[in-house]
Structure formats: structure tokens, C-alpha cells
Length: 318
Ligand code: 8YV
Image 1 (tube, protein in one colour):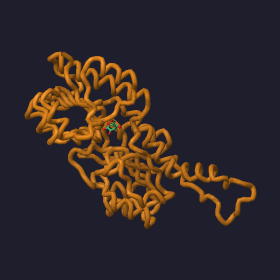
Image 2 (cartoon, rainbow, N blue to C red):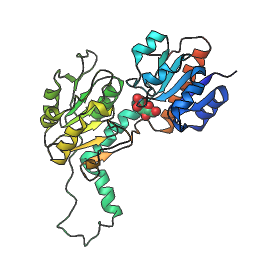
Image 3 (cartoon, rainbow, N blue to C red):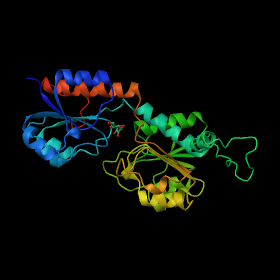
Image 4 (spheres, rainbow, N blue to C red):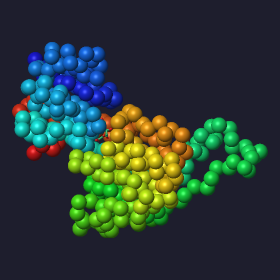
């Protein structure tokens, strides 16, 4: 009999889905109208869970899956899984560490360039037919802010933070970073204090894990970043105090932002929709065919190893 797997978030690569369906009896939790009833009926048979980094799995659902052996996170962040509880029960939690680093770093730089160069504003301007020889000089597009050479501050110098630093360095940007401690294998300047880092940066890029941090980018940090500063978040929405960020953007206390993640996805603060100084993405940093295929393969490998009685190599639970 095929092992039963509960899928908590969509997988968009057909070949990965085909393989998943070929080897397992897959229940798509997000398609269940009555989730409580579904868990009562099938919870006791579920041996594996596939979920996204942001989606994770609640402890309440885990408690209704007594035979659960593995939670394969199709993402790098495991902050939405209770790892301590999983360890206590001997459930492996795996993540796609390393598979999406380049894409996430690419998007961080893309968002920063889009925000400071006004790419989306320019796109809207052209589409609206406003680019005409007769366009009134009273309402021209404002000049943009140069990206090359910007002082970039990175919050969290893990895999993604380092990949962002490599890219920004190639644009001549001096790099500073903050983390729990200084790293001796990088040529970048360590700034222990986040407010200090913001004060010394033209752009702050949030690339930290969110397991133990919440709301660290608050009004004080944003005011230190200041009127000319940009905030980029490709990590987790909850790392930012969203009301503080919205206020800073609306009041022009920072220059702009590029956001791929939000506190309560897919909810986005409506106040941001009218802000020309913000570039918004629907949590798509890892959403390329190449990366999602790599991630999907890692998820399949984690399930296969677990059900073969082996330790999955991508486990983060030790
Ligand atoms: C993914 C993420 O988009 O890696 C993560 O932790 O949040 C994202 O890169 C998500 O996990 C896709 O399911």
C-alpha cells in the first residue's frame, strides 16, 4: 500500500506532482472543504506532510496525525513548524536548504533596483500612454535614485544574505551586515546594532531566518534608515513591524520598499496599493521553474528516504 501524504500547499511543477502522485496517496488539504472532518477521517493514516515554508503546519494539525514520520518543507524557512514538538515525536522535518539561494538573492537585487529606479512606475507610465512628445512638463516622471554604489546593509548573513552581498558588491556597493555574531570569512563590515546598520545604509535588505525574531524592523530602525533609504524584504513578513513600515512609507520617512513577503499572506496592507514608492510581489522569490524543480526533487527525496527507513539528508531536526 502506498504511504499516505498530506499536501498543504500547491506544487506547480507537473513532473514533481506526477512523481508525488505515482508513489503516494496524496491528500490535498487545501482543497478540503471541511478540514476538521477530513482530519478525523484520514488523519490516523497520514505518514508524510508536504508543505511550503510560509505555510508550515500548525501543531494542532500535527497532533491529529499520530503516524506522521516526516514533514517535507518545500522551502528553506522552517519557522512555521514547531521543530521542538517534531523532535519530541521523532518526526523528521526537512527543508530545501541551498536550492533557492540564488533565486531569492536575485529577487532581492531586482526589487531594490525596481524600487529605487522606479521600474514599475515607469512601466505604468508607458502603458498609460503618458510617454508622448506633448506630455506636460508639469507631471514628468521624477528622476530615480542610482543603485550602483548604494551602501547596502544586510540583516542576516546566511546563505541568502551572502548571495545578496556578492551581487551587490558587483554593483560597487559597500556591504555592511548584522547577525548574531561577526563572520570571519567575509570581507564585509559587521555592525552589531541594527539601528546603527540602518543609519549607515542606503538600503536595508532583510534576509534573516524568522525562527526567533519578530518585528525587528520597527519605526526606530526605519527612521534610522531615513528619508533616502529603501527597505527590501525577501525573508519573512513577520520580521517587519508592518504598521510601522506602512506609516514610514506613507509619511515619506523612508524613500521606498520592495516587498516579497507580508505578515498575513496573501493579505497586503491596502495602504500600500496607492504607494508609488513600493514594489510588491506575491511571495515569488523562489518561483522559477529551475528552482522549484530542484526544491521538488529534494521534497521527493526526503519522503522516499523516510519511508525507506533512512534518515533524510535534508533534515533540520538532527
Ligand atoms: C517558498 C519560502 O516560496 O523557502 C521558503 O521558506 O517561503 C519560499 O521560498 C515557499 O516555501 C514555496 O512553497
